[in-house]
Image (cartoon, rainbow, N blue to C red; front, side):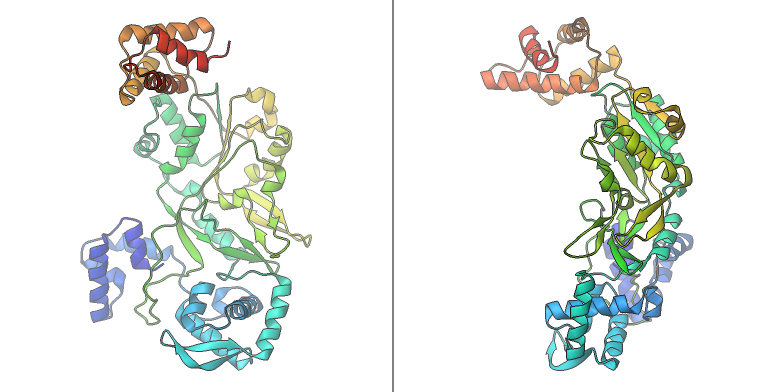
Length: 470
């Protein structure tokens, strides 16, 4: 992605005005940022802050910051699989600039790894492996089968994580209130959630089921507006660890179909990084300890990053805590060091361990008693313990009436009172989910029988009979 496309993706400048600035840049040769400022679209400080946060595209092999053997291994594996390549296709596959792609091809030619073949593909000469290059490809595939964007170094990844820490973003009360819509959340609870998110420290949401703990946690990532850069993968000890996951990471904007210019006018940044919103990762009853370790693909022989690494600089929700197959104590012990020191240790299949930052808003959600799940030492490590209570009678009545209107159900005041009293007589506490589910089931009941959608004792009794256990 180019800097110009990022301005549009972040909704800082409209596309038409960015295109106008690009046209002026092509005519004058001046930096795009200066033209954006002169047009009054952004301040000089805004442009400078955004540009300084973007890693420049490497123009030479040493600037990649990784062992050149890894670079050539991925190159020969790609050419071996594709049969041939061009400057553009190599740049696209390895996530590098065309300028570096041309330099890489020239270096590979000098070493007798590739050769140029007659014939033009999309206006460029074809590149194919030499016998030596094919031999290198066999060796490279024996190490791993990874073909894709070049990795960044572990050191560079760690620096970037710390630079875009979730603790570095200021959360406002307005952002929290907006993110929680359309949930009904009281002002006191909004304040607690906002303060905890702003602090970027671990949170425990607890309380009776059906009152929105998971829904609140899922919306917490929306209170953060900053962009983060996520690497396609990083390298450690000669091994490749994949990080970017389309199912987790919300990529900003679409990929640019226009070819990247190899001139000084090009405004792209290092394509090995993917601009994203802060990620949100959730794990519930399926969570096990091995999901918190590197996953080694035996066939491909490279690694998939664990859950908390994919959630780096974002929000990690441990939902339904205490209902996993693994004992709660084992999971909690896994988090002790990361929560205290904000670092984690991962191990390769070779036995080598390495250190990585632990930077995410870690949220535990449970409807079990925290004292039954955790000992005092671990409760101390959760500085924000937020009780998510059920609704008051007034809030329940208001929500029941609003949900009934959404479903087209007539729900008169006496019916609302009868509903609340029936739930209380049953000995069950009022919960937000009941005010959502009851009108839905009344509507379902009436639709099936062809009756007018009216809440009365018979239709409400049907709904409560399904919701409340005898």
